[in-house]
Length: 212
Image (cartoon, rainbow, N blue to C red):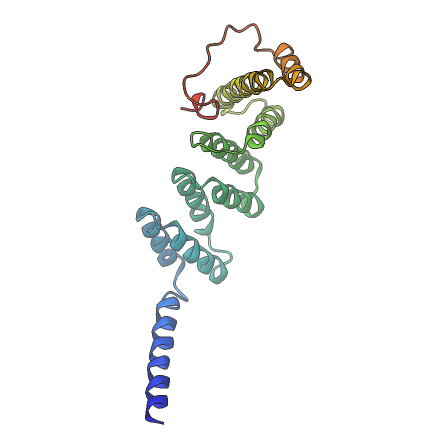
C-alpha cells in the first residue's frame, strides 16, 4: 500500500512538473509574445517560435503585431533552409493580410524560397518545372514588379538547369540503348531556346550548379 501511495505521489509531481513546463507561457500581452518569438528566432529555435506564435495568434487574433511576426517567421525559415514551412507561413500571410502589394511580396518570397531550396542536394525535380511556371505567371500578373530583375535571373537559371538535366537524361538513355526515350529528350533539346546558346556543362551536379 505504501509503495502504491509513493508511486502515485511521484507520478503527480511529474505530471505537475510537465504541466508547469508546457503551460508556462499563457495569457501574455502581444508585445511579450512578440519578444519571446524574436528570442526564439535569434536562438535558431524555430520549433519553439512556432509554438509561441500559435499561442500568440489564438490569444490575440486582432493584434497588429501578428502580421510582422508572421512575416519574420517566414523569412527566418527561409534563412534556415526550412522552405516547406516558409511557404506554409507565407500562404497564411496571404490569407490573413492579402492586400495587392502584400500578396505580390509574399508570392515573390515563395518563389525565392523554392529557388533557394535548389542550393541543397536532392531537391524535387518537379519543383523546378513548377517554379518556372510560377515565375512566368508572376511576371505576367505583375509586369511592372520591382522584383523583375531578380525573377528573370532565377528564371534563366531554372531553364539552364532544366536544359542540362534533359541533356543528362538523353545521354543516359543513349548509354542504355533506349533510342526511343533518348529521341524524346533530343527533341526537347532541339526545341529549346537555349540550344544555340553555346553553353558550358556545369562542374557541379545540375541541381546545384546554377543556383550557387
